Length: 467
Ligand SMILES: C[S@@+](CC[C@H](N)C(=O)[O-])C[C@H]1O[C@@H](n2cnc3c(N)ncnc32)[C@H](O)[C@@H]1O
Image (cartoon, rainbow, N blue to C red; front, side, top):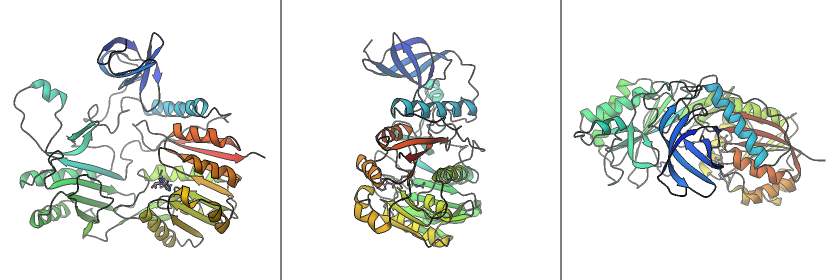
C-alpha cells in the first residue's frame, strides 16, 4: 500500500493527532486525516504515502461521529480559517490539552506536574482584532458551482486565499472572526469597486487596482483600515476611500498603501494616512498600547490579556527582580509585568517593534524598561548580561520554530531561578524543554486557547532551576 492517490475505505477515526489532523490505523500504519472527527467512519483519499504513515483527505463520510455539531459559517469546508467548527468547543479544548500533554511527554520526555486546565475563551467568535483580506479577479468556484457545470464568468472576489491554492480567493460575505464593522467594510469595498468598474488584482499576471485590505477592530472601539492598491490611480482611490468613510463612520483611521511589489506583504511599505491619526489604541488591563499600521499585537485582545496574566503568575515576581523578556515583539509582556519587577530588559529582532516597545513603555509611564533590537543569539552574550544584570526571571516567547539551541545553552548558563516559556507551538517547546531539563524542572504548565475553532495552541510553562 505505498501508492499515492488511492482511497482507503471505511476507516474508523480514532483520535486527533497534532496540527488538527485526525488519525486512524490500517494494519498498524498510522493514517493522518484532514477534515475528520474521532468517531467518524470515512473513505480517505491519500495524498502522501510513506512506509510507516500516510496522509489524506476525507472523500466520503459513511458514519458521522456523535461529537459533530453543525458548523456556523457558510464558508466552512472551503475557507481555511475555522476548520474545527464541526467540533463542540469543549471538545476542541480537550484535544488541545491532550496535544500539549502528549508533546511534553513524547518529545520533551519530561517528568511533568499535573497540567492545569486549558484556559478557554469566553467569546469563541468575533475574537480577532486583525484580519487581512485579499482582492482577486480569480474567485474560487465552490464545489457546488463546478458540479452544476455551465458557463461561469471570471469574477472578482475579496476574502481569504484557499489553502494551498495561491491564486484563488474565496469571496467572503460574512466572517465570524471579527466584530462589525469588519464585514461591512469588506463588503462595501467589494460593492463599490464592482459598481465603478475598479479592477481587482490578478495574482498571476501582477496587475490590477484593488489588492489587500487590513482591518483592525479594537476593544477600545477604534477601527483602523489599510487598503493596499496594486497601482496608483488618484481619482479611483479617492472615490473608494471617501465612499468607505461615508458608509462606515466608525472608521477612526483610514490608510492606504500603493504596493507594486510582487508579493502582498506590507511590512516594507509605508502606508499613507488618509483619515484620522494614523494609529489605533488598544488596552490590556489598564495598560495602553499604540498599534501602528505595521505593529505586531496579540490578535485576540481579551485572551492575550489572560495569556499575560498566566505568564505574570508563573513569573512569581515580588518587585525586586530583573526580568528579561526575550522575543519581546512590541514589549507587551514586559510592560504587563513591569509593576511587579525592578527592571525589564526586552530583546527583539524587528527594529520597528522595538521602537513601538519604547513608545508603549513611555505611554504607560514605565521608566525601568529597556528594549534592544537584534537577534537574541547576537545580543544575549555575557557582556550584555554583565551590563544589564543577572536575570532573576527569563520570559521567552519565540516564534513557531522555537528557540535556537545557542539561546537554550545561554539560558542554562545564566541560571535564572525562574524561566517562563510562552509558546505557540508545543512541539518545538517540548524539544527545547528537553534540553533545558539539564538544569531546569518543569513546575507548572497551562495551555491557553487563543484561537477557537482552529487547532492552534498557546502554552505557558514555568521552569525552576534545580538546586
Ligand atoms: C511569538 S512572537 C512574541 C511577541 C511578544 N512576546 C508578544 O507577546 O507580543 C515572537 C517574536 O520573536 C521575534 N523574533 C523572531 N526571531 C527572533 C530572533 N532570532 N531574535 C529576536 N527576536 C526574534 C519576532 O519578530 C516576534 O516578534
